[in-house]
Length: 170
Length: 265
Length: 47
Image 1: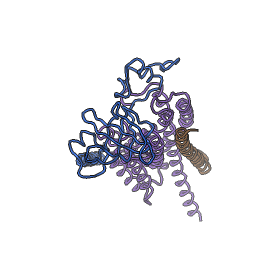
Image 2: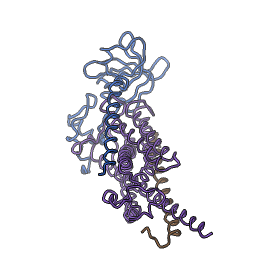
Image 3: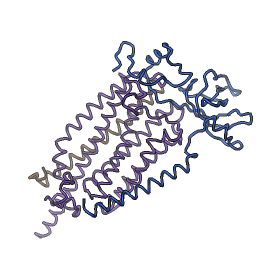
C-alpha cells in the first residue's frame, strides 16, 4: 500500500470513528424518545403529566378480556395489559386486530385517566418472533407444554423440527 | 497494460503496472471476460431457485398458527429486508474501494447498485405495510425499526441521485461514496433497533443457526427464497454493471472515431 | 378471495413485478450495449 493510500485509509478510519461516536452519543441522549411504548411499570413509576396521550405496551393478561358493545353500538373491550410486574386496565371501543388474544403482545395509544385506567383510542397487536404451523402449536398445547394465553412458546429447539401431521419435519 | 480500455475515465492508478495485484478486476476487458461466462448461469440459477422457493412458500409451506396464510408475505418481505441491508453493506465496501484505491469498477458498480438497492428497500417497506395492516392493525407506525428502514431507503435514493448529479463522473462517484459511508451507521441501527428499543416490529427470528424461533417447514422456504432473490439481485446488478462498462467503451470508441474523421477532414 | 389473500397477492405481485422489470431492463440494456460494441469494434478486442 502506497503512502497516499495509507493516508486515505487513516482519514477514513478516523472519520468513521468520529461518526460512530457521534451517532452513539446522539442515540443515547434521545434514548427515551426512541421507545415506541411504555410498560405498565414505567407508567406507574413515572406517571405522565396531565392528560398527555402516550403508548402503553405489554401482554394481554390471561383471563382479563371482557368483550361487549359500546354505547354507540360498536364493539368494546376491557382487558389488562401486564409486563409481569404491574398491570393496567385498558378500555377500548372499536375493532380489535386479528392477532389480539390473551397472552399476545399489544401496543395501545391513549390517555391514563385519574383512576389509573387507560382509555385507548388505538390497539395494535404485536406478534412475537415464533413461527410455527398450526398442527405443531396444537400438539404442544395438547401435550401440556404450552398455553399461549400464559406466555411465550417453549424453547425453539423443542419444536422447530417437530413433524407435522403425516409429514416429516424437513 | 491496457490503457485503451480505460480511455475516457482519466488516468487512474488502477492502470499503473505496479498496482496490478489489487486491480485484477479493475481492467474492464478482464472483468467483461470473467463475468461474461458467469452471466447465463447466474440468470438460470436465480430463476430456478426463486421459482422453486416461491412455489414452496406460496403453496406448499404451512400456514402459521396465529398469522394464518398471511405469514406467506414473509417469504418476500424478509429477503427484501436482507437485500436492503446486505446490499447497502456492499455499497459501503465499494465506497471504501473507491475512496482509498480509486477503483474505477467500484465506482461503476456502486452507481448501478443503488437504484436496485432502493427498489429492494421500497419493496421491503411496501410488503411490510401489506403485512402489518392485517396483523398489527396498521399500515405504518413511527417505531425505531420502520423509521430506520425508511432512512435506509432515502440513503439509497440519495446515493443514486448524487452520483448522477455531477458532470464529472469521478466527482459524483466520490461524493456518493462519502454519502454511502456516512449512511452505514444506519445499518446497525436497522439491525439492532428491535433489541435496543421497544418497537412494534418483532425481534429477529433467524438469529442463531441452531435454533431459530421458526419451524423448519417455514424456515427452509424462507432461506430458499432469500437465496433466489439474492441471486436475482446479483444478476441484475452484474448485468447493469457490464452494460455500463460496455457503454463507456462505446463512448470512447465513438469519440476516437470522431477525432479520426476530424483529422482526415 | 379473502382480504388476507389480497394482501399476499399484492405483495408477491409488487415484488415479482418490480424485480421482473429490473431484470428485463438490465438484460435489454446489456444486449443493446453488446451489439453496439460489436459494430464499433468488430474484431472484438475486448473479448
